[in-house]
Length: 238
View 1: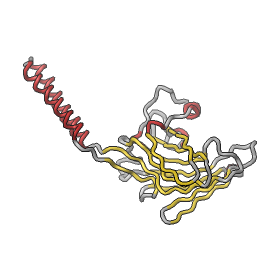
View 2: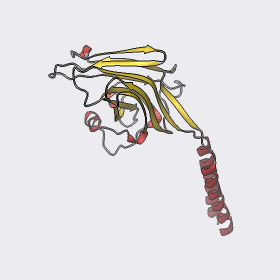
View 3: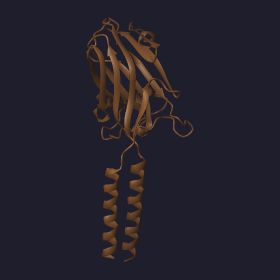
View 4: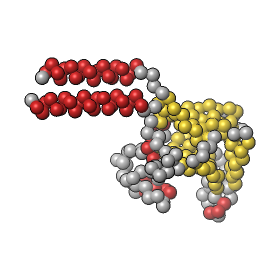
């Protein structure tokens, strides 16, 4: 019995070594340029009594975003771009599966040195109510931009859940799952240090999420699970 178990353990080790050396397939999912199953809209606070102005323009697969935050400091001011995902197969999944995404890539031209904030919205089954947008889990990251062309790759782990989300939703802070398997929206807004009344202009040529394919991992885990089941079967007989 001990010999059989030892052989099975060696088999697992060999599978792990094979997994490490098998070439991994990297993948990339575009957020911009747009795909068929996502929508993009621009928004500002005008409809809520504010005075911010924003607009977007498309030309040759490039997205120009203009925003000027309202000067009235007695009111809030906001504007931005928001992408809504529906998933490639809406019958099975209303959202996108970003479980294996490990980075986000930006190619952005900035007219002036500035800052933007990128946000990822995910469906959190413990908190989210689909008819209440603020209950979708928000993860954000501040991105400083230099004047001119910027090519930036951010590890997905750099995105964090802000304190205001827990305050708004009443969600417990020990609910730490990000639920990347249910990516619902992506958003770009002006950064915290963008001053009111100062025009913000950025030109986006690409936003994409990247990761490593799952086929090899699935085969490896399946093989390990099968071997473990066999080991427990032997031990049970013993």
